[in-house]
Length: 210
Image (cartoon, rainbow, N blue to C red; front, side, top):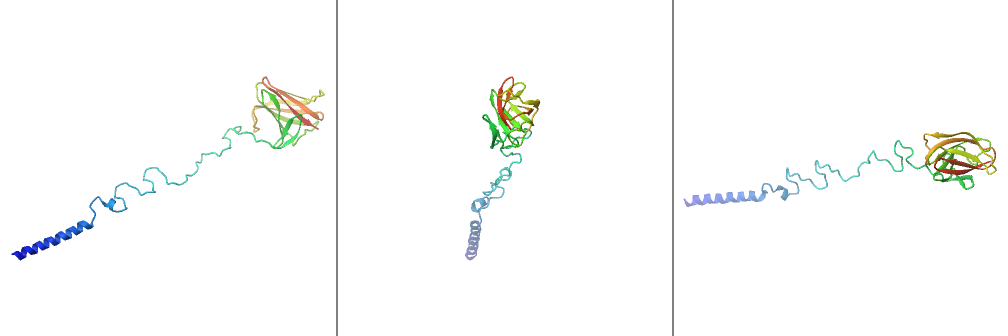
């Protein structure tokens, strides 16, 4: 009888050893994420370096340029006068201190003025102007009121004003002030004084004629 009991006890010990081995070799439930590098199922954690799902964050790469961006220096759409007029750099033949700027499509002159800013655009290939030939000159002048123009030599000779001043509604010539067009014939060579005045503002330019 003792032998049978002893055998049963040995079997019980063996079973206990086997059970302890299984318990020691397997991680307890819920401890998987701690024991390994992989996240536990359903934990919601995301490996480092990847954006979390639904967070709206983007990978650290340069975004595409916004198609609405406009390069600087460019005028805004619908406003051709938004940018400054190109600055001519070549000085042509002038007289009495009025420079002739010939670096643009047409020669320009900048006059001296009081209470105003004054510019002239000469519709010629180059200066000096030619005596006896009609020349178109467009003016831009700040101030107030209509424009009055006359041209003369120091000896009292006056230029023939064929037409104008005709007010323009606008153009692609970008200088300050309102714009007018005039047509003159200078009858002889000399340094001609062109005087311009408005109700507020006056000025003058000197034009070489040969």
